[in-house]
Image (cartoon, rainbow, N blue to C red):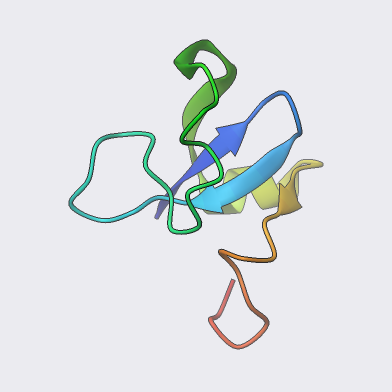
Length: 63
């Protein structure tokens, strides 16, 4: 599964299915310049030092 990493805040967000590349479930990246965002594997981001967005990821969703 791919997520959206906000490199400015080092926050990982869930990608909104069926939307443009950088649309997220919580909408937090809507006003972030695309140059500060990248698509990344959720596993890869979480293995690094990225923080999960509390609005996108909950403890019971398996991520």
